[in-house]
Amino acid sequence: MELIPLSDINLKIEEMYDDPEKGYNYARIVVGPLNEGYGITIGNMLRRVLLSSIEGAAPIAYKLSGFYHEFTSLEGIYEDGLQITMNLKNLVVKLEDSDFKTLYISKKGPAVVRASDISRSADVEVINGDLRLFEITEPIEVKMEIFVAKGRGYMTEDEVKEHFAEITPAGAHLRDYITIDATSTDSFMHAGRDLIFIDAFFSPVKRVAYKVIPARVGKSSKYDQLILEIWTDRSVGAVDALREAVAIMRDRLSLFDMLDDAVQYYWAHKEDDTRQVIKEFQHRTSISELGLPDPIAEIIQKHGIDTVEDLIEVARNGNLDHIPHIGAKRREVIIEKLEEWLSARGEKLFVESESSKTVIDIDLGDKADEDISVLDLGSPVEKNLKSAGVETIKNLVEIINSGKLTSIKGIGQKRAEKIIEDIKAYLEGKKAEVSESETTSEKEASVLDNVSIDVLELPATVIKILEKAGINTLAQLKEALETDGLSNIRGIGATRKKKIEEALTAYLQKGGQ
Image (cartoon, rainbow, N blue to C red; front, side, top):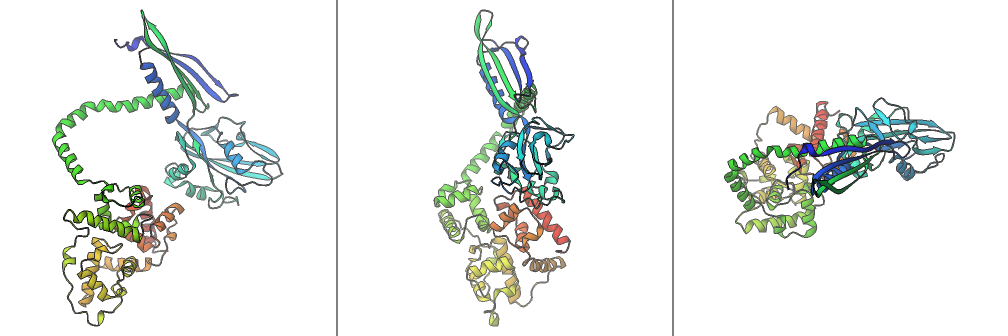
């Protein structure tokens, strides 16, 4: 069967109207005749895109005087927090020029508060102004802030909390934005503790239906006619939603315009790619090959470590301690399994550097029983050494000479080399001179040992993640930044890492004030 020429296919709108009373905008579009099978293919594709990918706006959080969580009930307001939240989910708004907006309501009772009571704004249109939000039953004044944002599809409450950093001004987290944006004269607006998040359904498309009926072309009836029906919440017209869906599909399908380039690249790099794939395949081993206990394997894989090679690199860098829920016992199990796996291949987990191979044979004399604190190794390093039973200079020399320094928790290859350099210089009585910048850095690290990360005024979520990873002081944070240890902490991505670095830099530039 030949393809029907595009010029012979008709597209018409059979019906289109806007119904404020029923709360929807409707359109019925008919397309045909189409080749057999095209009707259901096009109809299903359009339906999926319409329901999941059309941009709309929805409430994502609100603040109401006297309400601290969604289960709050307050004398003078008929509804409780849960009922108000459910009512608010039905609010339909249209944002014109911004991706995020704060809407305000201030009303004295007794009165029913409706969506039409929202203060008017040039770039916000409230579609269903008659929507009942709550009722004030006493002669009191109630103030409310509603935070609306643009988005696509559906987001749970937790996803809303996590993902709206990009929407709020200056890239701040929503909770931070609420705190600085709150009106200072409103006593109930304090530190965002009364902020109530809600799950959000952004899509303006409420329903899509299609059916395919037979169409006749000449003597044959083996053709399709597509009938597509669309209902929206009136913030976007049904025809406009269809237009956007088609644009999204066209944009995604335009990817295949690059097929010629892909073919040329394939033939040009086929041999190199084949070698690389074989090489990578030979050198990447599933984490399951180690035979770790299931709970430990699940924790490691949730942290994004899927191969034995990746885990070896993490262990050698001393970053196992930064993985949540990996304590001393689980760390020992991981180290043991890795050593067994590498030993079978003639390798070692902790490769000794040239400096670590050199045996320290200097006469310790009266320095043997001195505490390792005299070396000024830094609080985190000293703590890790003492946890492993290394208390004195003698203990440290013995473990260096045995080549087991890097097997201690938190002691990677680079850190081990620095420890060896420091103890040699100390024992020889001629501590190497350091540059002015290094001296400043040491003094700074000493001061920062006693300063909590709370002084940086980072978001509470970030503080919690850092503390969970064992980073409680500015010294520990500075060291993690310098060794790229933050990259291995779950929940600290590139954006948060940059903000942490900027906050610490700003603090240090101010002289720690």
